Length: 273
Image 1: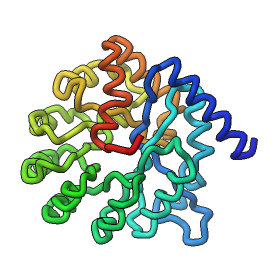
Image 2: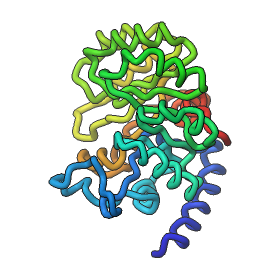
Image 3: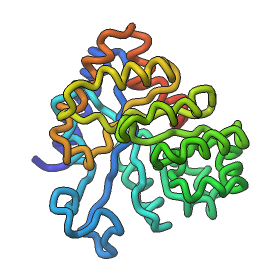
């Protein structure tokens, strides 16, 4: 099936989904990249046979076909400055991508990127939490900050978030880490910190307990849905992981489901509708 036909069918599914769900389910954590381009990619490594292949719009459409997920946020996994523009170009090509989150190099061109509607944040690791002045500029620009770091650094995130109250921080990939709850308590009362549930493991005996704990701590306002596709393929098919969260949130109110699967993401990334 050619890309034009695939995009048309996906757009039709978006319309049907909006009627069924009455809100678009947004996956806030996907990676789009192409190792076959002339300059290659810095990630994933060539020896990763599952991930080292093109993962583009058509592949995302295929992955979510059997789910009601219809939109995505592209998270840049490359540190190369030029790749911020590369993912913006992909988002401009496909309206299913509501926005992109670039890498830290975008801070050097913040004035330019704040004029790009699709560019809504940056992602950092713990080593950049000390860049307070730069992160203040990100917050002042109305952009978000995804943070990829283990629980040992959650205290530093809490401190940084307190120093930059106008920035919106999103902690990636819960419940990836074993027993993160003691460290998460340091973030529980930080109003400008959100938690991205993007590491559910279908092979786990039961995810209910950890999801209950996350819900109790961060509630209906500060949890957002993500998949970490295509890295999530290492744990199984997209729909397997999605259905775990769909089943869990089916016990919540309609408003709480909308918050987790759409509204909280819109509040934290503030993409243009």
